[in-house]
Image 1 (spheres, rainbow, N blue to C red):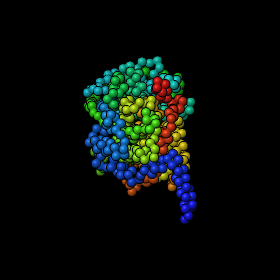
Image 2: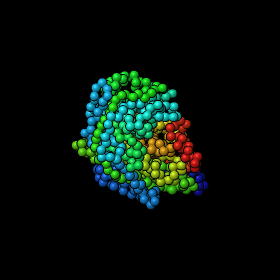
Image 3: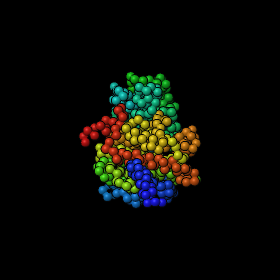
Image 4: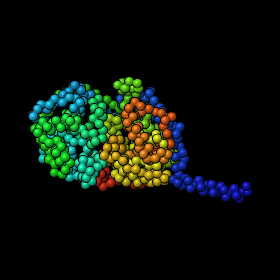
Length: 552
Ligand SMILES: [Zn+2]
C-alpha cells in the first residue's frame, strides 16, 4: 500500500470514527455497559446470602454494603457528607388481628370479621386503639380536588367520624374523558390518597370499599399486603392526624352496611361518580378495639455522586429500589423472596450506567446522583424520605429516572412510558428510542394506576419531574402478543413470590442491555442540556414545581 493511499485510508477511518465520537462521543461509554458484569451483579444481589433484602434485617446490611462497594469501585463519591448511606427513620406497626368491627344503629347489628369482611390497622403510635360509636358517613370517592372542581367532603364535618370511601375515581367509573383523567387512574383514585385526605378532613376512621376492577387487584392482595407489619416514615402526616383506623371492607360488607342503613348501594355508588354528589350520613355507628406493637427502626438509602463539569450544581437522579420482601416461612420449599427481577436488575443497571458515565471521553456537564432506595415495597418510603430530605436541592434537581424490574424476555421494538404525556421528559425518551429504531409505548393499562406504584412517584409528588420507563412488550423475535403474554405470565407466576429467582439460563439479557443503554442516553442527554423539562399543564403536582422554580 502506498503512503498516499495509507494516509487517505487513515483519514477516512479517523473521519468515520470521528463521526462516531461526534455522535455525542458516547461510544466508549455505551461499550462499557457489559452483559457479564450485569449478570454477576444481579446474581449477587439475588443470592440467598442477601436473604431477600428486607429492610432493617441482616439482609439489608449485606445489601447496602455491597451497593456502596460497587458505587465506590465504579469511581463514584459518597453523596451524604462523606457517607454512601442516608439513614431513614421508620415506624413499624404490627396490629393484633383478633379485632372485630361492630356496626350498630341500622336495621340489624353487624359484627364484621377481620380478613373475611374487612382489614384494618392504625398509623398511630399507640399500644391500644379504641373507637366507640363513631358515625359512619359515605363520602363517595373521598376526593377533595380544587383543580377538578370536585369536593366529596363539601358541607359536612367528618371530625371524629368514620368515612366509607370508594376506590379509584369518577373518571374511571364513567369512562368520561371530561372527568379527572378519563379511564386512566389519577392520584385521587389511589388508596394512599384516600387515607391522606380522610386524615386531613379530621376523620377518626377511613374504610375503603374494595372492588376488584377499580382497585386493580383481588381481595386476596388486600388481605396479604395489609395484614402484616406496616411501615411508615417516623415523620408522617397520618401519624400526626387523628386517624385511628385505616382499612378496607369487601364489596359484600359494604352492601350489607348500605342495606342495614336502608340505602341503595348501587344507586348511591353510581351517583358518587356524578357531579353534585353529596356525602351521606348513614346513621350507623362503628366501634372497634385492638392492640398494636410499635417499633422504631431504621433503614438506609444508598447514594453516590458523579460530579458534573460545567453545571455541577444541577442534578440528574437515577433511582432503583434495593429492597424486597426478605424471608417468609409460610412458603415451605423456598422461603427466601430473592427479588431477582424486582429489583436486583434495576440496582445492577445503576452500576452499569455509572460505569458508562465514567467512560465518557469528556465528563458530563451536570452532576449525576445514583440513588438506591429502601422500602419501595412498603409504600415508596425510601424515595419519599429522600424527597423530604434531599441531599441536593430539589429546585436544582432536573429529574428522576426510575428503574424497576427490567426486561428478561429479549429485544423489544418498544419501551413503555408509564404516565406518557405527564411531562416534557417523554421527548428525551422518544428521541433516544428513535435513534435505535425503537418507539415509546404508553402504559397499556393506565386504569391500574402503575404511575403511582414505583419510586419516581415520590419525586413527582414533591414536584420534581420524573420518568418511569418500563420494559416494552413488542418483542423483536416473537411479536407483541407473545411479549404481552410473557410479562403477564411472569406477573401471575413470579411477581412478589419466592420464584422471582435469578435464572441466567432462562433469561434473555439482550433486551435488558438495550434498555439500560436507553436509560443511560436519556440521562446523558439531560445532563448535557441546560433545560429543566416541565410537567404538562394540568398535572396535579405541577404547581409545586412552578412554585419552587420561581423562588429559585
Ligand atoms: Zn419493584
